[in-house]
Structures are given as structure tokens and as C-alpha cells.
Length: 197
Image (cartoon, rainbow, N blue to C red; front, side, top):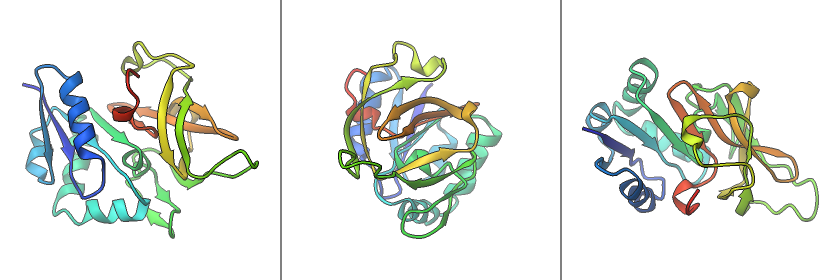
């Protein structure tokens, strides 16, 4: 039986994400939990995130056994994993928001501030933006370049490898919108707020 576990570590729009997965995952049980046992029992794992990189890493690290459990389930047992917003950013080697903080190091790169290159670039990047699809992936079935997704962020994931990027958006400069590697997929935007996309 399919069980989607959404990790509750005190940071994230949990109700909206839970409702979105219940709506789109017919027949699946959707569990919101801070217990590593629920991650072990999951067929699919979701890591949401809202707020500052360092606070999110600290919140997750404060859950006894959670970080080790995530590494085992996602990296060793290859369970399907989705990171959302700061949940995507935490996959990086490090983040620079409010100081330098170590990330998971699952996907090479660094989380850095969005550059304000012109007066019409507002920080945070907030609102709808057009996806620019870089390459195909099963999760992107039915999603194409020009489709809009909803973003709220001031920092972005500067990946080491172009091959890890599925989609970008243009916001004064190209910004990574979706990354993927093996069983891992993550979005900078909020899929639960992005309507049909």
C-alpha cells in the first residue's frame, strides 16, 4: 500500500501540502509526522520547508534520528523523495542565509541570495513565473515550458551540475526551479499552491 509521509519539523505549509497529496494520490495514505518510524514505513517521502535555510536544518536536526533515517531511506533504500522550497534547498552542500549552514549534501551546490540586478527585480521572488523545461522526467508528464508555478523565496539553489536541473525560471537571471537525481526530485516553487501544474 502506498504511504506518503510528509515530514513535520515545525517548518512548512503542512495542511496545504497534505491536502494536495490527498487530492492527487488516489488510494494513498497521507501521513504528516515528525516520527522516523513513519518515514521508514513510507513508500514516498516529502520534505516541505518555509523560512530560513539554517532554521529549517536546525528544526529537522532537532528530531531524534530523523536525519539518519532520511539518509537511509532516500539514499540507501532509494525511496521516492520530494523536497519543496527550503526542502529542496536543504539538499545542497550548504546555504548562506543568515550565516553559513551545512546542508544534506545530496545534490552538489550552494544556496545563495537572488541578485537584484535591476529595479524591477523584487526580493523576495514572489508570485507566478513561467517554467522553462530543460529535460524530460516522468514527474513532468503534462507540464511544459510556459506553464506557471508559484514561487516565494529570496535565496536559490546554485547547483554544481547542469545535469541535475529539470527546469529553470527567468528572474533577472536563470534560477533553478526543479532538480532531480535518481529517486530525488525537488521544486523551488510550491506545487501545492500552483493549481493545475
